[in-house]
Image (cartoon, rainbow, N blue to C red; front, side, top):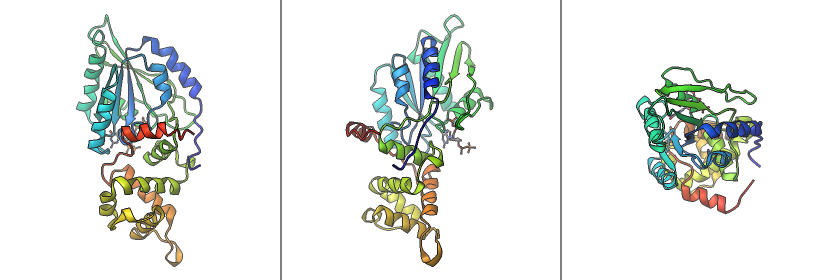
Length: 289
Ligand code: G4P
């Protein structure tokens, strides 16, 4: 298996969210717009499904806009759910969240008598600290995405009678299908020691070749990538970028790093690794881990 992922302390997070949820009006779940299905932790839905939910597809500036529209429509069709796309570093869109929460729980949030209580959750690296910092306007939020770091619970006052709680504990990704593991690894949500970069890069190239061949060809100055095998493609990219070992052999590890870095920074272009339909098919195909 390419991904060796053993998230710790989820039971503590589960307990802490379960204790808090009764007094929460709206749950904001931050998802990575490039992999919305894979970046959701199903445990959160189990614990908070009865509350109005705002799905925030963050990093939309890196994602394929057409596919973001598909995901937004998918979530907006669910009961008591709203979804919006976001670039968390931009102040004005982040403030739309406050308005969206007010629409989800209209009886709340207007006065001190009925304060709005919002819980914000998301797996590490999805942009939660960036968003909280943008909302608060200072660098108050703590990042705690190192394994074993326990975050202190935080309550932030965003506006009159509008309170935001950060997730108590860490919401680690939960990999339920193999493809989600690859996508999480490619996005940077999983520590690099937990996976084989070459395998993840090959999976990523396999997908990009089928869905974003033009972007690969333009970025790496290659022709007809759809006709290449995944390993041939990785080799061609390594050669193109001068990632060579002795005797003209390609340094595949280096080539894999190049592919992943250029995907993560969107130097390759705006890419989304799954559609709602594909994600549904992966679940239905039962490639459960
Ligand atoms: P977390 O608290 O959920 O763990 O995530 P955090 O805010 O630390 O964000 C993780 C990385 O994602 C950061 O980049 C951050 O700048 C970036 N990021 C967050 N939201 C967005 C977004 O909407 N669009 C884009 N393009 N990037 C976003 P980093 O390279 O780890 O750090 P730095 O470059 O900010 O120092």
